[in-house]
Image 1 (cartoon, rainbow, N blue to C red):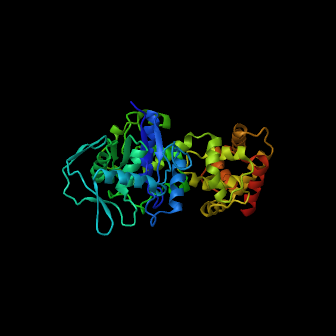
Image 2: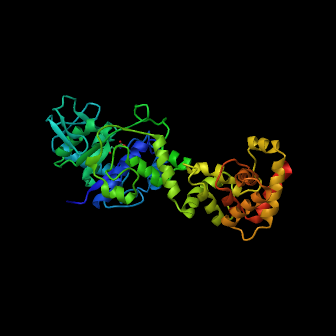
Image 3: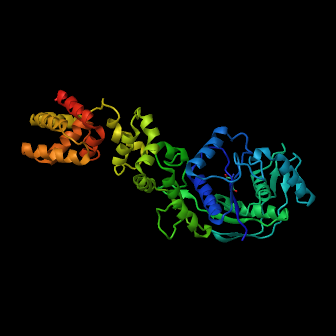
Length: 436
Ligand code: GLU
């Protein structure tokens, strides 16, 4: 079989939304699965509604998700330009072909209509099965406006012919018009591509996902601290259930993808599940990868990262506590500033028992004399202090955690102490003692 040529053909009228991204993703998967080409074509003929910001959002969102295109803006290709706004001469050419074939007539106002064949039309769809359309009784379709601009159905078909598109994978909202496209293909003497109309994405309440719904814009995932691999994986599950399971890496998803496996029933968006995917991906990252993903979030929080090795261990130590990169600063901020604040509730509790200050004083003295300094020796040191004072080590840990971080939650206390080092540990206990 010939290597397929598929395309994602967004209209740049808003941001890149979840539905569009999933359409792009399924096209990309199919191209990669079959060793074909994935083409990005910008359907920007509607000047009034198109914006440069929307184009950038499409490029950024696709790059963020790792959906690289083989042909299109920035990538070149033999069938450009890849912006419809720059293809007028091609459309004029094709219009002349239709005219020569006797399939065009003009209105008094100069608009041009395409004479439908008025035959029954079959759409063999890889997802929806055979969809039969009876011979239409609709009025013939306007394909060119009086100002000479062309309408969507016309340019969409011309470009699919010109760009040698073999498979059209797109949203189900286009299925009802596909007979018009097929009628045009035939009028040009061409076979229509294979179609796969993929189900809509519904929000949790069951209505069509809209711009106002949480998780609708791809940029919102980036901002909240999702990992592209996790979102990629989750989007695959909106309408597809690979036999190998749900949490799968890209190579496995590429190998498994078949358009005919996409469900025809609508998919339901579930932010909780998407977040769960992200949590799984986060905890699998190496300390270095997690830090590089987390850095923009730490910096946005005003944290200055001087010691990258320590920072990598710090974020890694709380990887199982968070689901989003955006949650990390609140878990690790005290590693990067000695001017950390204390949770008010815990401070009140700490002050309520006078012996707490004594215990911290003893810990400060013992830890100050400890050598060597690593997680293991620190742990043993705290146990020794506990034994000497005849208290449980488990009672000292929360005190230390609070003194060193101001928090009642966090990674293991020995981990915090190891990462802070001896000088900062002793200084922090002293800082806390001064407040008691
Ligand atoms: N510009 C159309 C859209 O964004 C493309 C439809 C198609 O893929 O054929 O819905």
